[in-house]
Image (cartoon, rainbow, N blue to C red; front, side, top):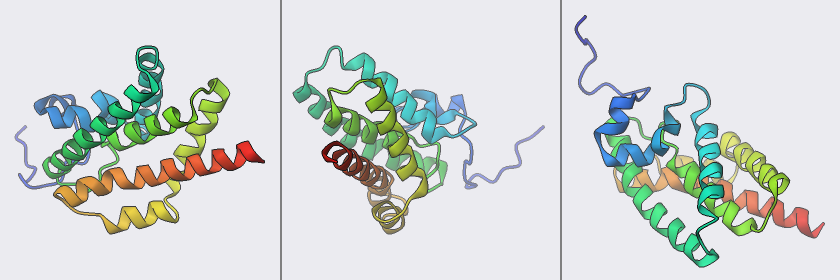
Length: 174
């Protein structure tokens, strides 16, 4: 059957072929986590958690800081390119924003055991899904294509990370 989709129609659900077609897609879609049919943002955050646990054995605190900076810059590029190729300003399948933001949370609450990390995961996912306050502002203000849109994809998750860290800090001093 011929493909009757218009060439400039938005790509609402990426495929493995799309993921592997460009390095930016591979990064932005979280090495495949963003292909999840159910809750790709949650799948991306879970992928981030597992990757953090694996990488944390080899990285110092300072190295994590560098990884997060590099991952943010690479993610800005990857999210910008992938959103443009998908023709969707902020597809839920683009999960690199969850990955980097959750790495930041895990790095800053370290050392932390399973229950602390699980609490961070749940709080982060809540803030990322609800999009209130700073998350809503970032999500609405930086919509679009190009570098501004790519930055916006990351910014609302960094706002969710900030709010998560604030809740954890208040919880620890209470």
